[in-house]
View 1 (cartoon, helix red, strand yellow):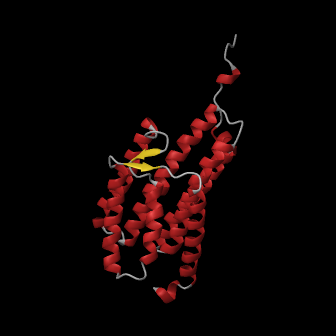
View 2 (tube, rainbow, N blue to C red):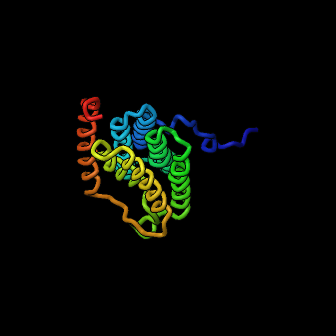
View 3 (cartoon, rainbow, N blue to C red):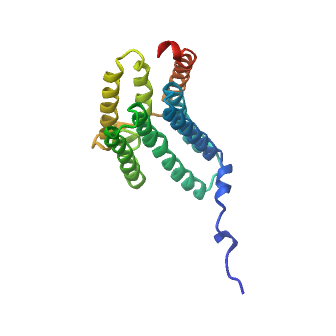
Amino acid sequence: MDNSNPKDSPVSILSFAKDLPNICSLVGLFCAVLAIYFAILGIFPAAMIGLIWAVFFDWTDGIIARRLKGRNDKQREFGGQLDSLIDIVSFGICPAIVLLSYGHFSPWFLPGAFMIIAAGVLRLSYFNVFGLVGKSTYMGLALDNNVIILAFFFLFSYTINTTIFTVALYFLIVALAALNVAPIRTPKFTGRWYYALMAYTLILTVIYGWQLLYIDKIS
């Protein structure tokens, strides 16, 4: 006699892909993959577009998840894990590959790449265990800020001497890694900050899109 409960049957993995917030998260992951692809090719304006849209979709999936009704506990738990895993790709691995590619994959850039990824893993592990400090405060700099800052920093890549910019990029990545795990409290940006991010994303997309059109002239 089978005493198993149908409710205890394992749920298929792909069934969670139909959840709207998870779809949004996966679109953000696709943007991050595009960013990695273009960074490896050395087309950094396109990489920055991919990165900043990865941030936008990372913020959007949370908004959808909070407003969408009828989601069960398993969907919320799965979405949280999915979001966390995508974050390390988008905001840890992507900046590391940008650094390595800009440094022509010199072994001297490996320590910086490792630091930003290791800091991301440590920070997300800490957050997954302890969560927010208070209602709207993080411990350490949230990982999405890595990309927000990096995308702004790259606006100056064609106006600064390449050697100087490369050194500055290295120091920026190391500094961000240190801030990710620093014992400091940083605010969680919500509400109207989402519209500020939307405007920021569109503005940077236009600027970097223009650079792509005239990349041969400004190189």
